[in-house]
Image 1 (cartoon, rainbow, N blue to C red):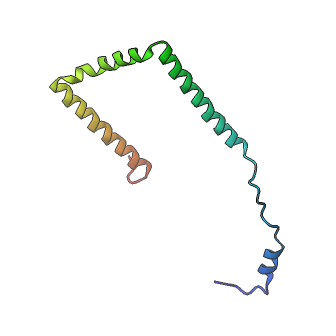
Image 2 (image 1 turned 60 degrees about the horizontal axis):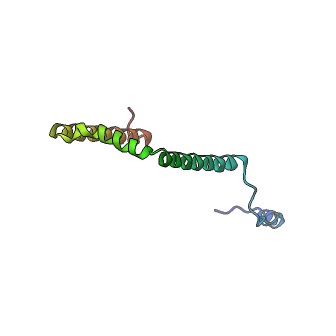
Image 3 (image 1 turned 45 degrees about the horizontal axis):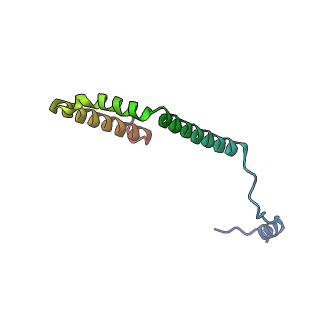
Length: 104
């Protein structure tokens, strides 16, 4: 839909300055996000190095085996399956709630 304005719009468009080809400077928040990502990467790297130097992988492997051992029995498999189903249903409810499909 066009409205008659006697060429006013075209005159205004011709007098507008050209858009600069240079991208605008990064804002402060962009810098903070970049620094946050850099800090996270540094902490992960230091943690990985410490786990390797102090043989922490062995401690993690032993702890994990100790936690998983009770689930090796047949009743343990049923318990683990029930936990997985309940966790999935909870996650599904959270996603649907956030999408406002239904309110809980």
